Image 1 (cartoon, chains in turn cyan, blue):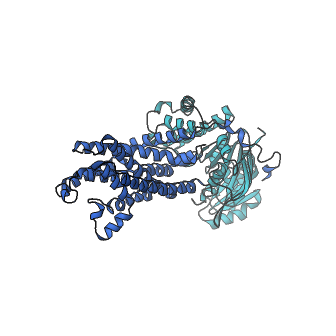
Image 2 (image 1 turned 180 degrees about the horizontal axis):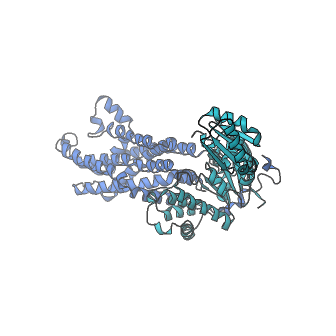
Image 3 (image 1 turned 90 degrees about the vertical axis):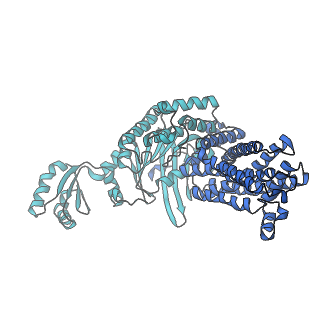
Length: 317
Length: 278
């Protein structure tokens, strides 16, 4: 740790009048898993496209492994592996063929490319299915093979663009385990975009939350969640007016109260102890909640706090 | 964000240190991508065989329909030797889509981006599939020539003439594939790429399709004179039916080379447009 392996300074990407990425800055240290979290259309894939040399920044600068993504694209491609959101594998080919071609194009000898293919197939646990065309693989198997293809040239830095989108929970867990293993055993720096809060929370050493092309907040998941204000009591009513009345009744109990439609969230230390007081005040006002739950803050709460929007409510762009 | 303190320069390395600079030689890149395109196409024979089947069908039908009356406009010549080049050229034109379809499939599946992210020479992304297409066309043309021999073709120029005929087919097909590849790269759309192959119809039918060009009348004669396929057919027909005619061969080669050069330039332009970072 300590070296800045991926650095972005004021990175901007415009498509005509639309600004997809609007002055994004961050630094990822060597050996870190850095989560780039945001809803669909937030600018995650555009950022990764610039960092992996597929797109040119409109403004700002970025470097990967010490190489400028705009002026030293070839060098960036040699030090970084990329698995894009769309799994770019030819379904008619077999895994060994795909890996061997990739290895040869990165300058490996025929023999070394074949050996590397075998190593990687063992690593991602696909060595038993090499006779099958890739088109016959499950979504999780294809994703793992895509990961293997990104690793052919033994990159020190790995970019993963939404690596588990579209996968079932079991396959998602497999991919998470693979990512952790690469980071733990090989010290690989991993830049990971995701739209899943849970994924960022599980995997990332640090998280940047991007929304409307800008980084809203950055830090370790624990620090971000702690910053929201400890535990929360969530009270849901039949209508928004009742929730509004509850906020007036309970606002002074909480460090912060957040109203979201029919639901009132009260962030406070010692939430469990405060439940009787909450219930008592609601009864005194004749407000009858439909549900009352106690929860620890999540990255969803962090997102809500820093953007004022509920994460899941973001439209798919 | 606070993380961007100036603890080290943003760009700290020069390119020479990246990955040891190992690189696969360019001809090997082309060969490997051609092999890969061949493997993919052989695994879907339905993508290759229809153009050969249609050309074989047309050869049998045209021969059966016109052989009886051919003596009127081809005195002393074989109608099979006249019509076989048309079948070979039409197979080459319709089969020229192999390279374009390979590329557009790669684009649609995201594999093209994966290749772009390797240190591969951009030209190899174009030349590999085009070489594979040329190999498929050579095999198709050779099959048609063998069928022609089976039907009784006796070429005036012997085995050398048969090889030259296949050579012309490759020139036409690979040249035409430049157009299809260009459309594939520009649009990244399989339907648009498939649409490009339909230019095969005017090229094949607005020419001396069934009778020699000097016996055509009116607008079709003008169209045939303008069609770059006409001199190529003329050269191939002469090679099979009358012998080595230097002037006709030069005209055929010139027309084929010009078509190849123009359409290849279009493909290169499209390649640049597709791989240019925006």
